[in-house]
Length: 154
Image (spheres, rainbow, N blue to C red):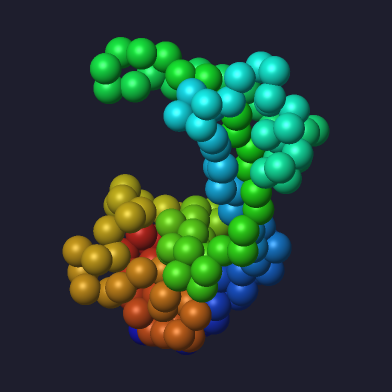
């Protein structure tokens, strides 16, 4: 593989990573809800229930849910932020980094005189090359250059 082409791929992916890394979420929202009917909460004791369960009043919402027996039940719900696990962040990066990578690779290679040819973007696995995010993190620019060489010609 041409070292100049590999250098352009590395440059493009490094730029993409700089833009992408700050967008990786560190927390996710988890819904907490209480079925008021199951808990025998009535409008008269709702205030006490909220206080006893430390429900954030400013973030709480009321709604109804439909049960399997076609009955509607009142609920109170709110969201809490919880830290994402390493696995969740890895999945986010695998699912999202390729978009940033492909846009940056296109820009850098187009400025260097390369033209994109008609080849799909999400097909690394078909060629046994792996995943763009995983290959970038491992620093495997030989495989990345091989993949992108299928998409571009000078």
